[in-house]
Length: 440
Image 1: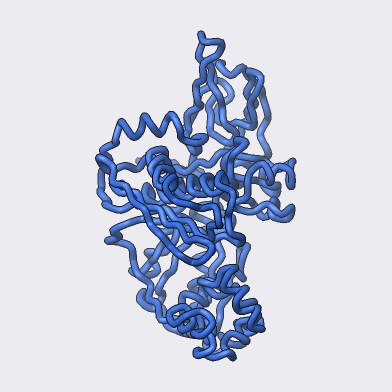
Image 2: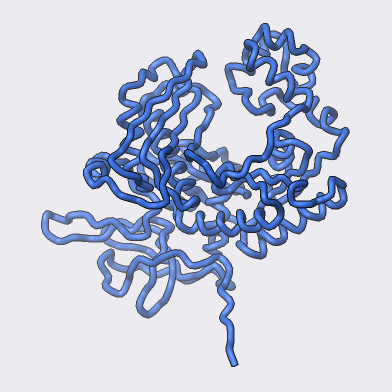
């Protein structure tokens, strides 16, 4: 999917279409989850501190994530993929591998392209947002093709053209090649995929070690035999990120871990599961990798609980010399949730800014009355004016734009007191107008 969270928000909010949108933590320590293509022009990208994004693109709309809506849209997309093949391997809410041959698609370029184009049309019609399709004979090449197709396109790498396409690409294009590996290869005079293939397996093994060198040579020569594996019986759910530059700032490491914990819970909830054991993975500057785990009293799918457990695990890890990869996982999966109330209470006291909740926060005002804090981007409904979304709030006021995904023009804007009794939080509406049936 193309800039998934931001694209969903643009589809849901007609006034933001064609404008820069940034989704993520909106507080002073927030981190960007997704930036629209309009915002990327200004240099904004995922994993960037929101404060830096605001400096680069001050006129963007900065919105709180609505994970429940993203999960619903993802479910529709994954359902369309499942109609193509029994072998669908989700990588996240917005990305998956599909084995088309297992679904009976003939390995003919014209037939494959037709399936891809139909899929793009079906996704747009069913969700209101666009996706990009990469078609190739292996997972690595399909991934590269989908990146080349963005945004809203399709790229087919036909058999026999793989090496011609890969050759001039930078070596960082190959999965598993991070900054440190790229620097090792650069010192050896290797900059492109073609030069990596020409170096030979023996030289790459000498430079990078047996497993890494042999694997890199296979990918550089277009060989990728990894099968598409359906996640029907997954024993764990995890996410991880490799950073372009090693992280040395402890606060940044903590923020990235919290962001990954939220992503992991998003995948967990999308699968309708909960988990009992939280695991973190830390790969340091020297490629040494360690994992730490903590088993809770019962299964959970609460992001605050997972964030807090991950933070406790990180507390015992030295990150001063640099971190190149972080990961968060949940194992011991179950189909139900038995919240650990003690862990929840502790998490509520120490967790970073909550994201994705439909309800506004309530805070104490002068130690007496309780007032509501409305987060930008979340859904509301007014007793007379109908449905809308929070455009901003502050100084005891909340500004709302009244529009729905199918509004013909951008909606009108009104401002209310934060405790206006006619204004209430609401659940997200579908991106496509529901069809009302008729009986006889």
